[in-house]
Figure 1 (tube, helix red, strand yellow):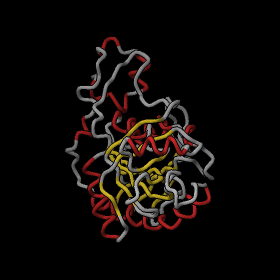
Figure 2 (tube, rainbow, N blue to C red; figure 1 turned 90 degrees about the horizontal axis):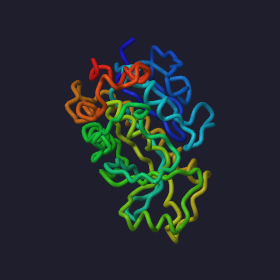
Figure 3 (spheres, rainbow, N blue to C red; figure 1 turned 90 degrees about the vertical axis):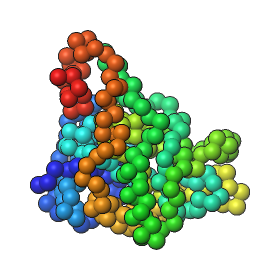
Figure 4 (cartoon, rainbow, N blue to C red; figure 1 turned 60 degrees about the vertical axis):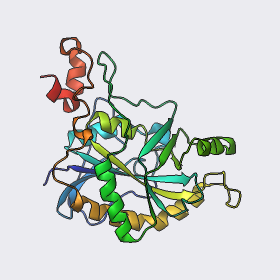
Amino acid sequence: MAEAKVGIIGGTGLYDIEGMTEIKQVLVKTPFGEPSGAITLGILEGVGLAFLPRHGKGHHISPSEIPARANIYALKSLGVERIISVNAVGSLKEEIHVLDMVIPDQLIDRTKGRISTFFGDGLVGHIAFAEPFCTTLSQVLLEIAQETGIRAHWGGTYVAMEGPQFSTRAESELYRSWGGDVIGMTVLPEAKLAREAEICYASLSFVTDYDCWHDTHESVTPEMILANLHQNIETAKEILRLAVTRLPEARDCPCASALKTALITSVEHIPGHVKADLEPLIGKYIK
């Protein structure tokens, strides 16, 4: 089987990828507990692929409970170099319509209780995160989305909220005043952890609602989200199928060397168990 260099993290409504061959499921043990579930390995359009539904089988994991560190670590340990994340979001702007797709290029972190780093416990690391999404990967996704005919928006700020409750109207208006474009619950801490793991990360954000700020649209409900998202799932799968065949072989983006100058702690002062646990991430820098 080809090495799984591309990972797909499926969000609400996307729990499998049709067309994969040579399929096998693996349960990966990590120092950060179990991932959301078994990871499906296979071949899609001749490319090795790893697929993980972030909410688990049957959608039983709340956004605040997603084991993000275990998920990213597991994908890294399987050889994944690029992650395409599929996310359901609400629109914070009139011109971003329900059923549109957004490929965000910025983030505002409004999460509260999620561990968002692999570091600590004797190892200090500070990654650059000014550009939180991989531009190269995002550009490929945009080009393919435009080919499918979906109304796609390049760039924009994704406001990551804690949840699981939806926004109050006051919060929604506040995020709009900040320049937020879409709002969701699942891009963070994935994007931060992927950068620490030197994995390219980009989001296909599918708009399911207008949050609660829009006077002429009803308040967001789970039923609304699911109904609208299901209309875009087939489009998402087509974009993913084409994307895996268009990715450049070499990675010359900053994501690939994010830890080169990020590790602050002297090697001799890094605890042995931390070196062992994080070897897939930091091994090449501490030898």
